[in-house]
Length: 218
Image 1: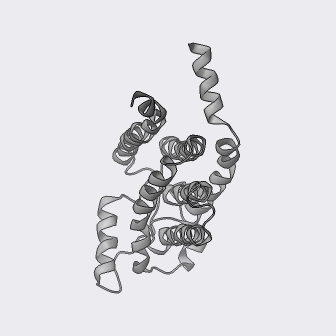
Image 2 (image 1 turned 120 degrees about the vertical axis):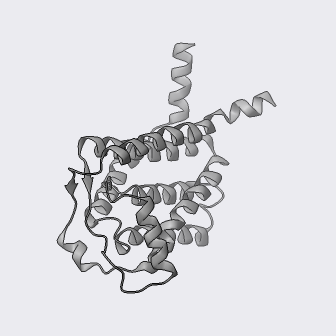
């Protein structure tokens, strides 16, 4: 029993980092409410508002949970690589929010329709401020989830699962712009960041690195 628990100690990264990130996010959300740089491009004005995509914006939370379940139940090395990828991006997001306060002015003042989906959008607007948006964590983490799931042994050989993950990832990315929660620039910066962080996270043997560190300080 002790051996099995010891083998799963690396999973503690999820609740520990998750708590630290939520604290950091809550702090920047409370502190940065004005005097920020407005992120707005001409492309944003060409993208229509579509409240129906709010469904995919909320699906992001389920997508994240599914990724954690599948990746944490698989290979330790793959789990650590996915975890490192996500943690680096989320940490950089908080750092950027502190040193470069930013926000957006894309949200519509009123909706052309009044339906269940616009009510979901209104609820999301009330819960999430239009600040601290660059890079988009919704976009960055969706990319990280797709990569993590496609590398997971239970999924990587199932083409339908990989396609479903890709469609979900793309739909979530589109939703951030179609419900006017993020600028095109937020999306592009998240994609660029994922390309930069990928080799660092996935080309490093984190298990071997941790073992070396443990032996060094033992």
